[in-house]
Length: 562
Image 1 (cartoon, rainbow, N blue to C red):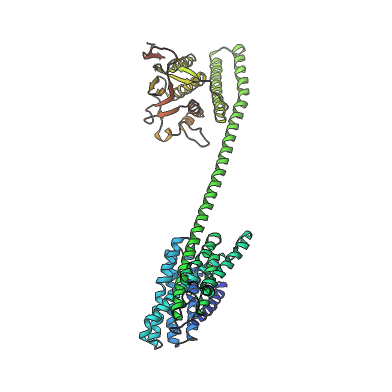
Image 2 (image 1 turned 180 degrees about the vertical axis):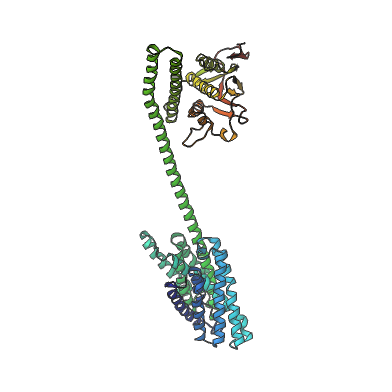
């Protein structure tokens, strides 16, 4: 790092700036030649250490030594003062880096106050104490004057840190930026207003009109707050420095609210006032910048959310279009295959092997046809193309009819089917309700071994009509329960995919139930413990008188009973 070509130039630049600022500050020394109420070098040192790192300390030490050895005192006292000034800068920079976000201390209002406490009020004690001690030990200051010299030294360094460090740090960081073109006239008006107010408050302008100047120092703050709100912190810091220069010049001329005291006291009061104003303005600018960043982040998040939503909607549309295309494209070959099987039934061999082969083909074609129908229905439901034709239905009668229809196909022959249905009414589409029940029964058949039991229940609970389908099948792992009604995606390892299905039947069940204003639930105690699906639909009053007695009907291996 020390071999960096810019390092010698940085040292030289800050050394020169420190010397010029130090000579300017000592030209305003009144209580002692080495103690000034205006000390910009503290701001120079802190800005250098915060922006370029601790490696620039030699420039600070050399600058402080040259300033003091060419002003007053011996080489020994100048070395002592230079050591104190360097330690002050290193301690202030360390504390700010450690607790106030370093060079970004002016980005947040709380860090601005931490900077003021650590760098301006605390670390400057080191320089004042070491410097005054060096002068006393060297015989260049009397013990009787230590209090006044120390206070002037400390407050001058503190005001230098508060006024000049923000300006230099913000300039080194943001000097390439510029206000927008639309604000050029506003910036010019701001500078003109600040200058006129500074000359009026600290000059002789208001005195000539017989106005008391002291209570009117608050007039300096509105243009500075204007700068903090409308412009960058850099512009606000520049205005604070410019106003401080005007106030210092007019105070030295004997004008302004602080001119009634001695020259040293007047400058101390002025620097205390300007340091306070600087902290207020920079913290206000930090608050404004924080709000701008928050608003920008909110806009960015909103934009990303809108883009993500658009992408999701586009992907969803693409999925629906693909499902619709897949269903339509599969219908034609399926129709041709089933027709060919029918022809083979009439013309082909009639031995057992050929008949079983054709039966297997017909069974698989039927299964594939149901899958295609489900895919098309899901696409239609998602796109809003399905319109329900609802009417008052006795769910007990409708569900028994659905079970009977499925039993007539022979698919229930290998299971015990237990149906218990109580009369309960709901406003539903008969075709879609039959599809819902058929899909749940098909799902139960698929995962229940031959000889197992499938129970269908119909009943009511308060304002809900409930249809339940339970089985004694392989059950569902707890981790899959909340995903049972989701449409599978690539790489999905759901239970139904492991058994050879697409898993679209349950997805269609949920969407059709939701179209009816209801909801669907699934329960399982785990693998091997079976599962239960419950359909909840809004219950309505019976459309016609019915027998309220519970109905029991068992289809399959157990005789029917009533």
